[in-house]
Image (cartoon, rainbow, N blue to C red; front, side, top):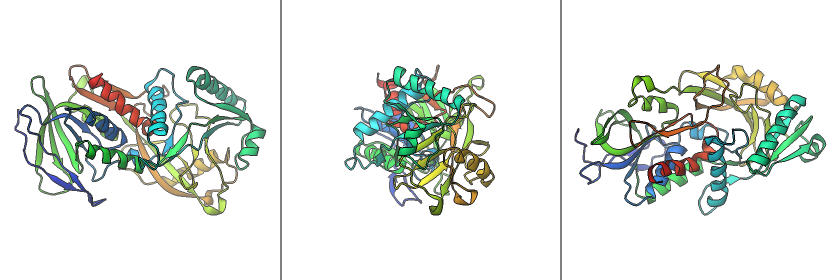
Length: 408
């Protein structure tokens, strides 16, 4: 077993200028930490938060970026999903509903500092085919999931949201909302510090190995200095919450015939100029496209009531391809006009883009659930793959789910 470096490394975030604790080994003669969580997005943070609550756990979170939550966690719609769309027995449904309840019932404002708003959502049907989908969705949500949904007519919809076009009907989801992902990230980071967990930002995992007698060895390097120094730590358990990079982390350990694959689904967002902005009080979603790969280009409002549209979906090869694809503007306008008829191409401006890890590729149309499991033959190694939407909503519930894997 390679000897772990027993010195405290201090890494400074060049983004926030906040001093974070770096990797520091413990005084335990067997392993340096009980749990290492790879990835500092909201999911990794939530898992580390839950595990750090357990007495006796020695938790370290390792994040390669120079600040927490810089990738998928901060480049999304910031929607609190109700859990309507997915199979009732799926992890996506279970953890989404639980995550929504945690946000609304436990993350009160201003006590926690987490900012959210339960604004509600409509899913709108414009023709008979979409109406049939909406009726099935309503039946599943109300009868199987027990969610407080309602169907309203186009005439009532016109009274409540005169700037939204609803030709047939709208499914009302009152438990949908919006949340500041930044405030959630800050809340979790603060409580990790309170709980005594170590947080190493600007620290990249480069190698990982497993020995049944000695646990896991992790080789990490700093990405914020040019010294090239590496730190080796030994841990009893590893949680792979690497998001866009989770499959590469998994494949450091898994034999080749069990290697994992993720695809990069990029979504572009467009903001609406003030001159074309007609007020809308809630989230507006179209019926999802038939390929089931996304929820469609929808209208979201931020906490200030400003409107933006997105995301669309295109597959990319780079996890850093964040330039908004202006070539998608025409298709976005066409999709948006179906329910927000006032918009013209000149009214939309590129806002930002996000990339989500998908288990299905461009030609896949089958439902892909969250992959969260302890890998056979690697006790204590828990993989999380394909944590796309509703990952932000479900993040706190995912943390509790992983904690149960370890602690029952």
